[in-house]
Amino acid sequence: MKDLTLFGMPIALDEETGKLVSSSSDIRWEDYSRKYSDKMEGLLADPDYKKTDDPYYDFYKAIVSDKTRTAFSDVALRYDSTVILPGYAGKECKKTAGHFHLPIPGETFSFPELYQVISGTALFVMQRVDDYKKEGPMTVNDLLLAEVHAGETVVIPPDYGHCTVNIGEGTLVFINLVSVNSMNYYDSVKQSHGMSAYVYHTETGYQIEKNPNYTFACEPKIVVPTDSPKLGIYKDVPVYTEFLKNPDLYQYLNAPKELENEFFAMLKEK
Ligand SMILES: [Fe+2]
Image 1: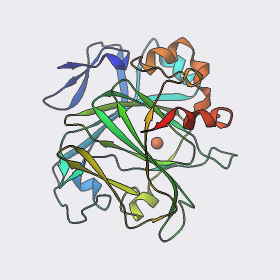
Image 2 (image 1 turned 180 degrees about the horizontal axis):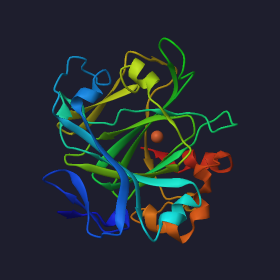
Image 3 (image 1 turned 90 degrees about the vertical axis):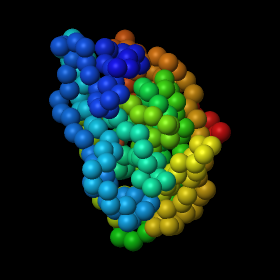
Image 4 (image 1 turned 180 degrees about the vertical axis):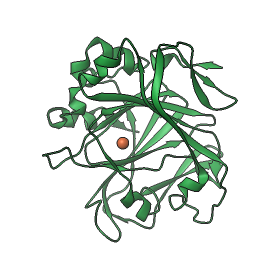
């Protein structure tokens, strides 16, 4: 059992099963699901990868304790976790499916999303395209690849499609904080056979390859996150703990325009 102190609550990782375990009866999640490799068909770099029984990732929806439930519901935010299991599809690192968020009702832009890595190392692929609902190849206008280690946090800016890739050797555990009103849109990533960057495992780390199903008006940028007091983000401090001190500070996840520049300013080019 591996203690995951960055959760901010007593949750551990059972390394045998890859599942999260809570040691307190007070803590629960609303839903749990495991995605296997067959559900990743059409999203992988190798279209012929056909394994059906390889677990890819688990999703734990709405993790709360009885004491903190209203702190989240009062500001319409949800705290979830995803666990990406170790291993590769051929040479491609395991990843989440990838999606865009639909626009905020009454606005022309979408909800952002905060992610903190709890254990392992992630590469967050964030892409802005000309039109994520169009037929045919999408043009990528901005492609940010954020290397995020345990204890670090990144915020996906509004309108950026995103997926998370496990670039470490072991299991990757991360949490997200997102508006309960945010709706995911998966079709365009599926139609393009994944996000615009494929990530391969190498002897020395990882390697990026552009997905040929997109056209590119930019080059990928590798970035790393830094602390952001304005966004309530500090390295090695659980977002969960920081959120409970001042839930209203995180209202930028429901109304992002005022702090949007900060989502980019906290990312430094590597
Ligand atoms: Fe998302």
